[in-house]
Length: 94
Image (cartoon, rainbow, N blue to C red; front, side):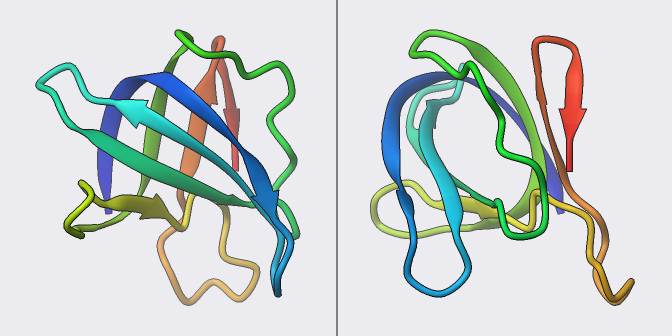
């Protein structure tokens, strides 16, 4: 689990296959982009996201050839995995 800060550069449609995920891409201050996949079957949807908005994401990072993705940005309902969260406009969602 790690913390990643960035600005939203792209809002994507929800992934509705299997567990539903809200998706957006952030650009890190050091460069590069990361896809954030936020499980909205477990955590609340983050309303009001917009391109250019700063966010802080605490979750599990997985590297890939496109920069990587962050997931586990929510509480674990079974208490078997460390809880993650997303902070947007001073509110933590998880």
